[in-house]
Length: 336
Image 1 (cartoon, helix red, strand yellow):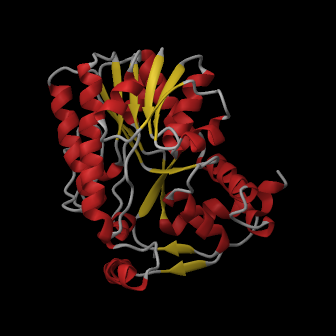
Image 2 (image 1 turned 45 degrees about the horizontal axis):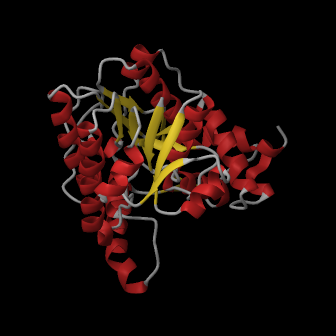
């Protein structure tokens, strides 16, 4: 089959394209930079593509031409307060344009790559495919909640739409060094934060394989949480230290103080002109994480997530090879 992918030069989109091509499928990309596409895939590898963005209907339709399915991964990801309106406008308009065009073209299957933020509710005890849209009222989370209502409406009308909800996506070969991989870099080069709650980590290659399997198997359209592995913050060092073979610096942090710091930095960043990776929205998720249930993807597709230690090791090995961390910081993974 030929699959149109948005965000094909981003982390999830790139790996989804690789997984599909490795299985013998053809991909069509919507890209903003042909140079970046060729640098990632090599010249001549991607022969069907369109130049434009997700809000440009004509370039979307050009990329969809001759396609059987769609994987929509493109989104603006930022939890900075100053980006809130632009994030919401970009993600909502883009999703409506891309998925709306795919519906009009009568594609056999559509995968909308969402986020745990679309379902996030700090008052919930657990998130699964039955969870209602989340409670976020601003920024990135709000954009995902609005998109969630839109795609659920399409599912209710019987359109072949699947939704995936990756947790914190980590792994090797990241074209843009996304926030979760920046976090891994921080853990091995600076410190591991010890806060309340925890986080869930999913390997980008697992996310890509789920997208391939959904398009090949085409189960009943539904919603699939890709939580991977939940690790409480206070247990994270005991998982990471055997991977790197050394003790890591642990920094106890009061969760309320981190949310307050995020609020302060949201106001300071535009004034001082420095991109500070601590935001109020980001700290809300980090200190109030609600565990995601992987049950549906495991049942419907017979899928098993790879061990989180393997994902950490491959990510750290790649961070070193890409020049983001030192040999000492990578530690044991370079000797294994």
